[in-house]
Length: 208
Image (cartoon, rainbow, N blue to C red; front, side, top):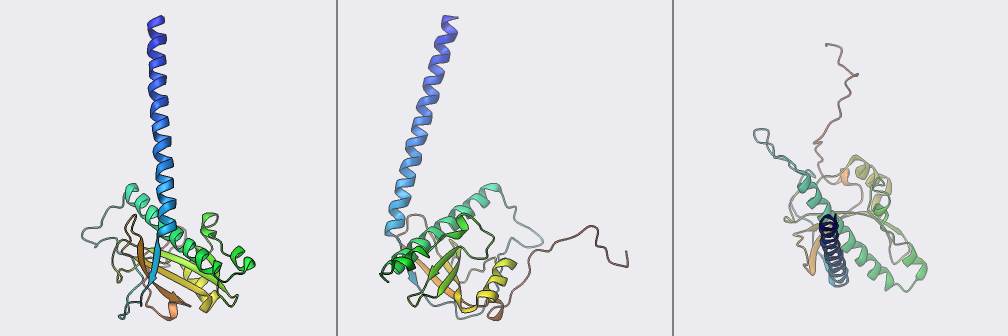
């Protein structure tokens, strides 16, 4: 019985040490991330001259790439970092307006609701609302990206108050990020191709 108790105590000690190390590592990562957000600067560039299709390729018909959970988690991590960087930038910009009420209007809305069609609500120096959807990629400037029906409709509804911030060539810990803006109704400016359809098994064609 004494031996079993000893082994049990040693096991708990090891588990506690591992948990403590994990907590320390997590806190360090969070601190490093906050330090990066304080330092990172976004540099605006011109949009690509050639029109491109807002579509993310998943692979050809002959060899469709299998999307794993790890891929999705990586994409979300990159997307979240891009949003956080833009949000911090908007706070810094609006802070220069020296208007406390303006600063209170800057919100990272997608943290609580990601179905609004935009990620960040901000404000211009004139007091007009800005609705910002952030699209982040580790790839180059001309890389196409996915845009949802809700985001397209939101761009139509908000008009010139709607912005897409396309952050490209993203790298973790990189202190300077490039991005360009698309302002207004996206469907009026670019050729959009549907890449996904919904099939209702109860809605059959008449010839079947």
